[in-house]
Image (cartoon, rainbow, N blue to C red; front, side, top):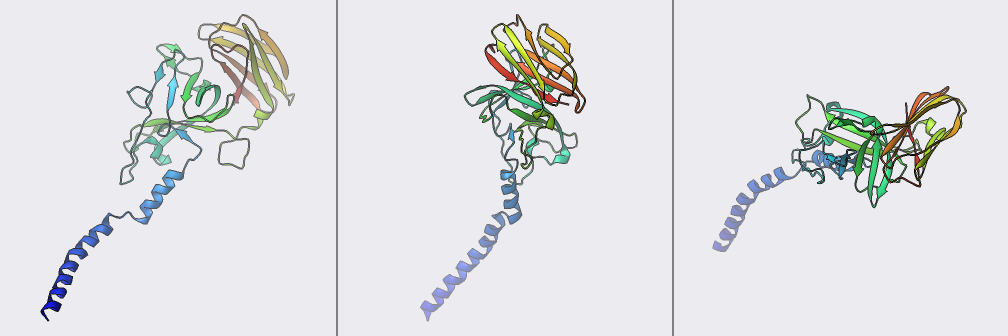
Length: 286
């Protein structure tokens, strides 16, 4: 009898201890909604490359790295921690209503190992009082090829957005010719209008071809950071022009195309220094 009472007493004490602690245990377990949200966040934007996942450097033409996300050395990639309460901590995690986005068309013009150099002419800015001939982004862990066009999206948190760090950033997404994917697709005129430049030592050969035959005029300008190297207007849907005595400096070829079907198109092809004996294709935009 005494033995049974001792056993019953032990069971009662154990239950007293376990029942309160078991409630705490279940309180600490994440809800199903929380787990789902984390999974959705981890699997979204699978094609996008952003600054929280890889090293992106904005490079001036003088070779200096411009880090728009922080005051630290831009050679280090940014690592961010997601808070347990799932509050947004970077601009990439903010809901779309809190973010201003601007899309640009860029192009890979050089690749060394797995590092790509991307030219975005429309993002050119003034650096130390001198206007860039194009804006250059250096992208690590790059699977793109030279000549590939990409969509570059700038992200800026709106004034009414929750406080995040960084409050601005970049996304780089490759274009696709297949409209059946979630990737941005190239406009139709990309398969019609072609621009390329062949660098031959000190000379450069410009090639323009509009297979629609509907180009009324093309104004061409080649320039570097110091001067205009060549300018001219052509009234043909297909032509070749040779520019002589091109210095071994970064330069850009820009075209304004008046087409009867597509209206006014802008084309550009950026050539870095030491681009002799290479062929560079152009990118187009409206």
